Length: 312
Ligand SMILES: Nc1ncnc2c1ncn2[C@@H]1O[C@H](COP(=O)(O)OP(=O)(O)OP(=O)(O)O)[C@@H](O)[C@H]1O
Image (cartoon, rainbow, N blue to C red; front, side):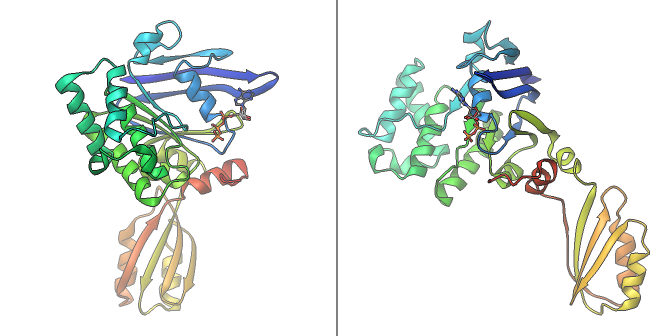
């Protein structure tokens, strides 16, 4: 089921086009990555998707409901974790969650259970009684996540949740996303300008720059937009001229380079097979020490499609 449909969204601020005809869909249960450098338009798009901002053109449906026309029903599906924190510093983590839970009408046993789950899944159970002002930036981010899931939204939108936080909290956030997606089938929309995070977490990806679509599809498809070729790195003993000549004669080999005991191959991704390569090595009495296959990473995809680095 398509849980989010974004259709032909455009937005101008005065004369500046910030979103230019953006369309994509997200399936229920997906972890979907929205990637782009600072100023690409990600936050503006999220504000439109959550009904905080009106587009100049296009429409958005959330759980089958139009975010403008059936706003209340659409919003029931949504949990938003914005970049800014919305926490009360002078009270404990538990009391913060009690407050947010009661805003959603939770009380008694149900409220306690939800708080327990939210603290547990964000790794904050032991800090439940500590005042928020004692928390590190990363712990505050995690508490912000906990607050956003008090009403168990079917969709969780995270706007750059790992900017400026420590590696431990970053790992907690990754584990949180994977757990809530697996345990509750929560659909995740994850925005970031860190390609490696999106590469690790997401199944489907929308890459944008200056308000425009750069690439969209499942991770493999997006990667194959720049290249169908893979890199195979092989370490073996007894590397000699005959061996290299035989490898170069294989149909799927585009390029072959040798560094000491390492052979670096660029191969055609769709036709490369390991077996003929292994047979050649065996015939040459070469023992393989290691072998790995690399796809191009998303950073390389962005660079290749826009000519820019993501972190400019
Ligand atoms: N209220 C506004 N009025 C005028 N321009 C705006 C407004 N909000 C955003 N912009 C501009 O729209 C563009 C997109 O901003 P947006 O915050 O959506 O990008 P982003 O991809 O989320 O970047 P970041 O990661 O820095 O938040 C930027 O050029 C920004 O300056």
